[in-house]
Length: 160
Image (cartoon, rainbow, N blue to C red):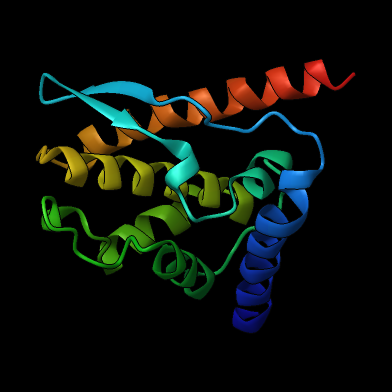
């Protein structure tokens, strides 16, 4: 299953880089999202994320529950196991992987959750903002997820 997940990530990145840009879509995240972290404005530019956003959004209702190993691999692929310069205390540990496993979310929903967290961590690093804990990271990530899903809904409505 690890090889399949890796293939899926690579295929989706290929699709988004080569095929999707030429298909007449409205780009997700063509504007920065402003969120407040530690009373500082942080801009999150979703187009800077190198992870396949669209796949997560399109298949948010998928019901397959991933294994612990799949969750750990997803976190690794997205870069959440690595320490960031400004927020090294927020890199995922085994306890975080177990927490997400117990949530019972689909792999696609986890991907959206993890991508949102990575976007916040990347933006916080660029702005030099320290995020106090996983709870604050989660709150900021929820704002990103909301924006991604709202933008996707607009895109779907506009294409009909």
